[in-house]
Amino acid sequence: MRQLGRRSHRSNGKAGLSLLEITIAMSVIMTIMLASVSAFGSSIGAVNSARRTTRATVFLETVMEDLSAQPYDNLLTFNGNRIFDQATAAASDFAVDVATFQTAVGMRRVDAVLTDLRTNRELGRLATIRSDQ
Image (cartoon, rainbow, N blue to C red; front, top):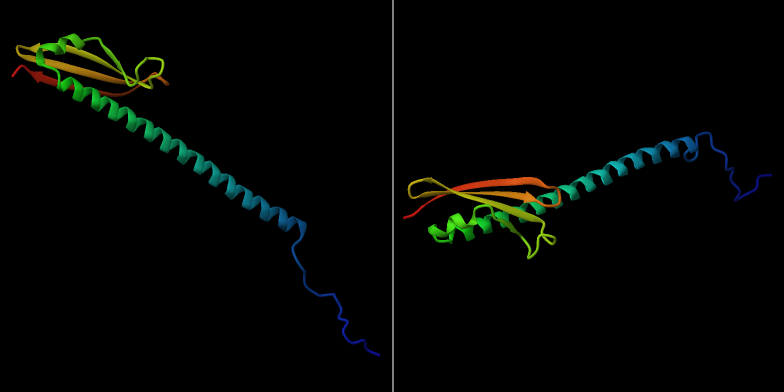
């Protein structure tokens, strides 16, 4: 006699995944996730570096604008000065070293070198020539 409602749980094919298949799938997923996290971390580092370089460039431009507003006769007084982006050298991230000298009669050259004080690396250099007229 046949029993109704009971079915056999046996099947001829595989039911589910084996432990080896799950391990391989997890390894592939973890490799992809680690690569993504690494790329994300590198992106954050690049963004922070770009932000810092932008701040430094704006500071250098500000210093050069301030120097261009100075009267021609006062330019030589800035020779050898170091200008910081904060009130004190200890609190500053960047410094601009200024050099001014006479290049010809009625002409003065102003050089500015931007330095990152954290890494002590030169970030930029600008030079301009001013005339007395």
